[in-house]
Length: 79
Image (cartoon, rainbow, N blue to C red; front, side):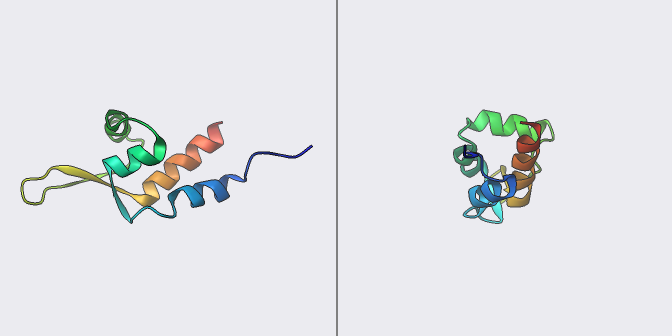
C-alpha cells in the first residue's frame, strides 16, 4: 500500500516556489483557488500577513510569500 500524501514541506515548497517575494491578492487567490474576498478575509483575520502598497493612488495589499508558505503549513498540520 502506498502513501499518496507528499510530505508537508515538499508540497508547500513546490506550491509557493514560483511566487514572487511579495504577492498580490490575485496571485494568492489563484494559488489557493479561493476568491479574492476570501484572501481579504484571511488578511483581516490575521491568517495572512500583508502590507498596504499606497503607490500612485493604489491601495493594493502585498502578501509576503513567506506568509503564504506559513499559512499552508498551518493548514497541513491541522489536516
